[in-house]
Length: 387
Ligand SMILES: *Cc1c(COP(=O)(O)O)cnc(C)c1O
Image (tube, rainbow, N blue to C red):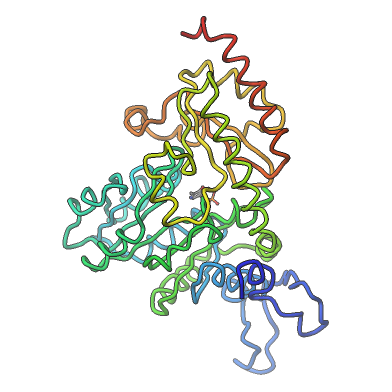
């Protein structure tokens, strides 16, 4: 089946008891058994829930995985993957990962004896240089947030195979509609389903996708034993969300390409970062490993004051953290999503005070441009004073 057909149907059969075309929200904690240990495969809802299973099968199909294992947040999904490592083991990760991911690894899991090195994974020699005998995993985010740097997934998978490492990819930004890491050789894909998979900014969730049965069993055990499961309503919301994933992603991408080109030409903008622009240093790699460029654009206005003038002036773009919803959002990573990163590291990663990130929604693109252009006009007017 094609992607859109799977998005709408995979994991979902008409409800066996009523024929309801939409999978019900099985809002239950336990299941009645016919006799001791005689039941229909459902015992207790931390372990099994039909709405969750439908959501897990649905996203697994879209990623080309055999197993989906859902969690109560993207962070819980990421933590479950780290939890399959043992104390004393080591992993390598993209240095510019999602801020919460860095916080989890650096401030919690490293206290439990799981160590890591953070390097720029766009340079695989930098990865090679920190691999040790205890290294088990390479954890990659591509493109990164907010600088949209890519890691060559096929080359990373080859490197991992050579050294016996698992390749884990956070595919939140691209979704399986534009990027399928398992097909490029990754072992584990994960998402914050809060973002594009759900797409409507009305729940928090995460999911891990795996093909290897043994690996899936290990992550499934963490889900059951540690218990960071999503509730059935949230699973149902993502099930509804993925039905429109294909049309939403096409529109996010369409709108973002137009806005990126116009931002790149705008005199108030110093630099526009978008993988779809030929000026992106990894534009060729983007075309090779992604089938679209997504809905996130980052641009540099040169100063905090210029960023403030812009963020306070937009009306359609809402000033908020997060991304991937139908509505457009605008933020300043240095003081919002990436505020927990030490200032020196932010500087090194190029997350400067004037850097603005937008999550381009699926509104009418001309309304979005008019909104941005109006806000940027304030920067142009103030430029002599801003320097
Ligand atoms: C939001 C996000 C996360 C964390 O997910 P939550 O659902 O907020 O817990 C992880 N990775 C990326 C790339 C994200 O954007």
